[in-house]
Amino acid sequence: MLCYYGLRATIGEFQAGTLPDKDLRIANWLMTAVFAFSFLALAIEFLFRFRRASDIVAEEKAARGF
Image (cartoon, rainbow, N blue to C red):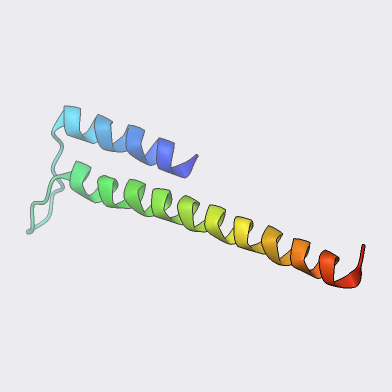
């Protein structure tokens, strides 16, 4: 969900062409794209951990005989 909203913000910033009022003028959409990608990577990592945890629970149940 955070990736989706980050991607929406990135597209909005790109279409608007906004720039920050700082000395280093990097387009805002580049910064929001980094956040959107980070949230996507975090979601993928969560799914991998969830899958691994369910495998461990299944192995423990098999070892107990239930």
